Amino acid sequence: MATICMPSFLCLIFVFIANFVPLLADDATPVIFVLGDSTADVGTNNFLHHSKARANFPHNGVDFPNSRATGRFSNGFNTADLLAKRFGLKRSPPPFLFLRKLKCHCKKHPFKGVNFASGGSGLLDITGSKPTVVPLSEQIAQFASVRDDFVATMGPAATEAILSKSLFFISIGSNDIFGYFKTKHRMPEDKFLCLLISAYSKHITTLYELGARKFGIISVPSVGCCPAQRLVQKHLNGSDGCFGAINDFAQAFHSALDTLLLNISSQLPGMKYSLGNAFRMTLDIIANRELFKFKNVTAACCGHGTLNAQGLCNATASLCPDRRKYLFWDMVHPTQKASDLAAQTLFNGTQYYVSPINFSQLAKDN
Ligand SMILES: *[C@@H]1O[C@H](CO)[C@@H](O)[C@H](O)[C@H]1NC(C)=O
Ligand SMILES: *[C@@H]1O[C@H](CO)[C@@H](O)[C@H](O)[C@H]1NC(C)=O
Ligand SMILES: *[C@@H]1O[C@H](CO)[C@@H](O)[C@H](O)[C@H]1NC(C)=O
Ligand SMILES: *[C@@H]1O[C@H](CO)[C@@H](O)[C@H](O)[C@H]1NC(C)=O
Ligand SMILES: *[C@@H]1O[C@H](CO)[C@@H](O)[C@H](O)[C@H]1NC(C)=O
Ligand SMILES: *[C@@H]1O[C@H](CO)[C@@H](O)[C@H](O)[C@H]1NC(C)=O
Image (cartoon, rainbow, N blue to C red):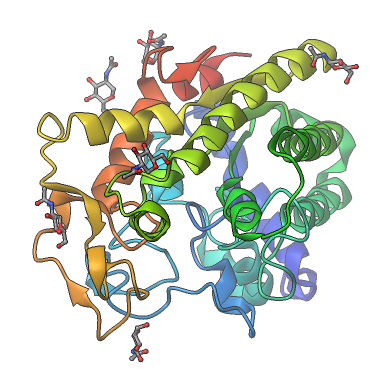
């Protein structure tokens, strides 16, 4: 056995076979693959030496077990964790770069899936820029290497069977949009939207060709309402609200993505998807904060300066005493409580928030 474990991913496959077959029998936990940006990153960027998009220091993780800063951009668990939890996992599967480093130690960990998400990344390779982030195209290449190891160990038919039942969660797009609005001389908005949607189309098609069938996709939230963008709005015209232009774009992105998914799912046999409307979820929480028991939906819980949005959450930042009362953890990311609300809605919400089916139906449906 030990010799089989020499190359990094072979070992993972060994564990996979040893542990997954019984799981398959009771069919309780689907294998989960997570791709995306900081909303889903569970420590990928800790392995990128020059990455500036990191969160592996306090006050991040203050509400995580043992108050550990794991690299999650959150006070505790993020949406990838809380979604995985609804499917019977303890939290998100570990980062690809972590598993690759583990080698034989992974014997202790049964295979539940892999998380490829990288903070700062986007649909476009230029977003975030290498080597500080892992762009979505490279996350997919990493998935392809996992798949190659599956095929090498158990053959193409078994691999196909497993992947067709696996869930692929994707949460990405905000960083491309932030980047666009920061650029001075930029292409027209409709042209940029087309660029993003055709990139998304290409990524989903590539995953499909590699065997993915069930896609749980989370669109871009109303990012114009995050503390950092509220500050941008304030500097632009002195008003206190959300940054309207960027929200309009995020909403248009959701509609275009909805149309794209409808179109490509009709062309790719066996493809199933759920699209979560993160834009609507965030705006509805902001409009009804009492209903969700939030006290503050404008400022960050952790940060520096105005709205706690003038500096990153770090050890010297001001920290709100009750994280459950805040929508925003830092200047762009949601708190664990907000992520949990999102996960619950994605899992079993109505078509108003997640369509054409919710994530629990996506997992069941064959
Ligand atoms: C500032 O711009 C936003 C839209 O981006 C608009 O809703 C708001 O009324 C403007 N405020 C002022 C004071 O011009
Ligand atoms: C649907 O997809 C096809 C092929 O990718 C494309 O030619 C067509 O324009 C798309 N239709 C819509 C309404 O987007
Ligand atoms: C939220 O916090 C910010 C900054 O601490 C403050 O300016 C704002 O008034 C607070 N909002 C509410 C509704 O308490
Ligand atoms: C925390 O962030 C603030 C604001 O960006 C910065 O001035 C300070 O040096 C940082 N502190 C640490 C310990 O990194
Ligand atoms: C969403 O999920 C729940 C639980 O699986 C289910 O009962 C419900 O009908 C689903 N769909 C909609 C549209 O609400
Ligand atoms: C959705 O799931 C949560 C917990 O996972 C549960 O409390 C809630 O009742 C469910 N709602 C529906 C409509 O199934």
